[in-house]
Amino acid sequence: MGKLVRYITDDGAAYIIAVDSTDMIAEMERIHKPSAVVTAALGRLLTAASMMGVMLKGNDDSVTLRFNGDGPTGSLIAVSDSNGNARGYVQNPIVEIPLNDKGKLYVKGAVGTNGYLYVLKDLGLNEPFTGATEIVSGEIAEDITNYYAVSEQTPSVCGLGVLVNPDLSVNCAGGFLIQLLPGCPEETIDLIEKALSDIPSITQMLQSGMSADDIAKRAMKGMNIDKLDESEIAYKCNCSRERVVKALLTTGEDALAEMAESGEETSVECHFCDKVYKFTPDEIRSLIKKGE
Image (cartoon, rainbow, N blue to C red):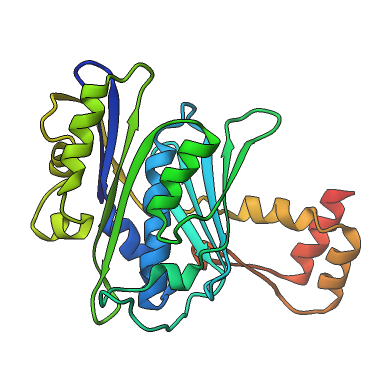
């Protein structure tokens, strides 16, 4: 299981979430079998969604990140519940492009640098909160930082990383998200900037054996921080046969009748976990009666 931790400075001026999402991203790779650069891109977005998810208040709240760039991956979607359990989907999972000029996976080349990051928070109200910001980097972390600055006016710093093995399995994945709280003094800001000026990459820290707690402490080096809580996170889909039935009912009686008259099973596949739900013609006819 992955691990997510939350800390706050002892003066209440800044807050950090750090996560080891290796297991979660490995499960995503097992389900979707994307190419290496797509694993890195969607893995970063899932990790960010997980950290944003635990900031929600209600047990049934959720956050959806949709990265619509102009790159060959097409849309990337990550959804997290308020416990940090996330699931994701990518329009084009197989993208093969050259490495960047540093010999690393070229994430921004895969997802694109023109387009928008959409953030939808379902807080159980009549309408979800929706924010959108232009893509400024395509590397995901910088775009999350920009989203908070522009859409929520919250000074933040996000770091994300996914290391993919030559056999396309996930070596490690994780991230951190620092936010300044109202009234944060300049001294704290200076300490954070100093700590981040020479911080190793997320994947370097994880490869060296650092835990989520270690990453949080390293990112806030020079400051006294108190642990708020920790939780286990996983790749978790909330699909069910009942949800699929509700979705089928929304297609309307004519569409259902056409499915039943085909004489063949109707298969509905979940984009997030690839689970397939099958319905016989008789079951479809029963749904028509149910919807009457």
